Length: 67
Image (cartoon, rainbow, N blue to C red; front, side, top):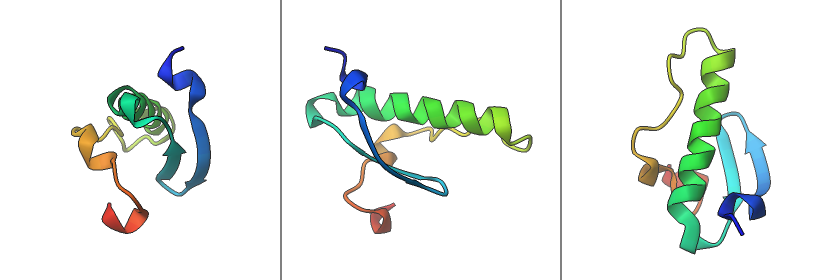
């Protein structure tokens, strides 16, 4: 089964997304979510050329205060 098929969106507030996933698939899950957010920001915010985080590992935290 593809990792993204079992993604579960937990919460979305402002520019924060909380997701739960099997950590065996951390890179594919986080880069996929990063791409989705980047595409949305780019398409909806005319001042944003690319909304992606350039280093996906910065997106992996235990809670929002670590970001």
